[in-house]
Image (cartoon, rainbow, N blue to C red; front, top):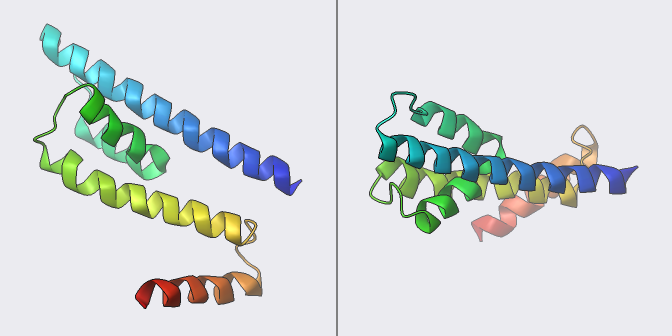
Length: 115
């Protein structure tokens, strides 16, 4: 059962990043065409929080779109680190958030980072 959960988390993370890349691509196409149906930055932010920050950040460089945006160049790497932190903590603790080992292992990880 745990292997299935790990596979689902990996598939979710990859699919959200692909979706966020396609969202940024459609935003670029809409802006080039002068279309009024723009995708707002709030949608990009929500997608990034849900795990798609890496796709948005890489998409900005691959598509050469909005690389001067403070929102994308500063906040997206921070959100990528936060997303990866939660995924790593989940894999280390085998996704048992409410067990006592979660608190101990998380404390060990944070102490290791503080050193």
